[in-house]
Image (cartoon, rainbow over all chains, first blue to last red):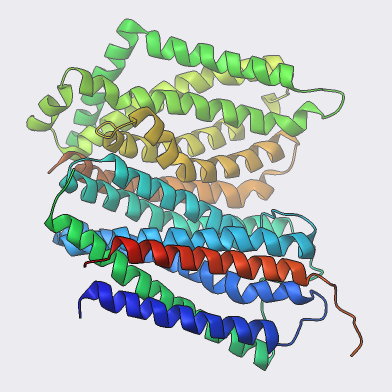
Length: 221
Length: 226
Length: 37
């Protein structure tokens, strides 16, 4: 079975399991008393956010190895991880405000996760645009690697920034959506969702990687 | 190391000499800065929002616009006469080339900021004398940060389509962060807060500068070599 | 059971729907692009 086909099957499995996560989260996980049903957005929002950031770190690592080893497969992996990361970032940036509105009363909050993900989103878009704008494949791979490494190095600064901002401007802690001390059943749902998002990341990247490699074999305009 | 710096200065001098012979870029940037400040002035109602609240943001938006102008011209000049190829074939080290560009860009942006700051004080009647030194310090720190990354990226974008559009898009996240910190520091300085309160941000800016100047120096060769 | 929690299930449905749409749309996009590979 080709990589692309394995990727498709993995994705299918992931989507089926996602349906199971949905059922478990929506019907079989207790409703959080202070936040209400909207708190359940957390089970989708947080795993997506974790993978958005992890995907960026992987782009950075692949980029570093690419610059040293010059292996085109590393460049293809970075390309794949960046696109998948962008998709996950979109999920975070849409579910975040939908969660924020009933909980915080406002569509956008400069909280740790949303702010970081917004930055990651800008980095991803820049990365994808750069790849699209460079005609020569050799230059494209090198430039993308440079940008990918810079993006990865920016991530800790983003975290520090947000930490600084939070310690000096404490968020109204009526609810703490970002710091889970979840009781058993909720933790299990969260864990299940995270596992499924992992499967989806892998399935997506396998397909996108196969696509990138195929385009390398047959360079087209 | 000293040799590299001397070579870097040679590169910078060349750029700056070219710049000052025509003077168009620096004049445009200065005029643009004045324009932006003027527009901001008309856009606000001083009775509704005290100037001091808006001042830091206005100052920094102006500076970032000016910096983008400076960065855009950085490599365009080289590309015009295929001068870049000439530089690359010469025995000039990549480090010296990057540092030369960085120094030239920094000086360019510094001149614009040096004109912009007094204009800002004039237009908005903001007292800065008592905090001039730390204010200049934070301006310097933030400027080095985003100009370092911008110089690196400008080497890449000149060979892309829509180069002028690509540079701001790519630089954006690397620009927002140091500028956001600088705005925080500026706001506190103008409000007369004690220096200890801004220490954290200044350290963060310093760390950012060290990290990204080093990283850009290391990555620069990959943007110009095969 | 005492109804002490806020009634914001609409937001929950919206968010879950949006996430599902994005994931399925992306999966379909990949499927179409990698057909034949």
